Length: 130
Image (cartoon, rainbow, N blue to C red; front, side, top):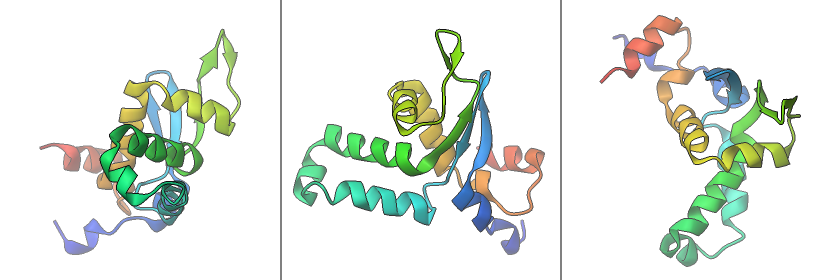
């Protein structure tokens, strides 16, 4: 692999990439984006660093709130009682409250290959293989 093939697409990392999850689609910004880093820092500042290190549940809450504000940008195909959900912060929080979905979104946001520049979908899938 050429070194220049490892460059990320800064636009994709900052504005997000659409990813399918069952019948739903999510627009996910990467964890390495400035947008997410700033949101995480803002949420973390509300608590003492010592408490964040000692209290895993609090750290997870802080990270999830930052994901709702800056990582999960948009979604399609998510309904409640058959009615499509609007893209609001409250609905993004509700989506992230479902652990399997939250973990999947976190995995996608942290996956460097999702944000590589000039990569065909098949090439990205090949890079993800162990």
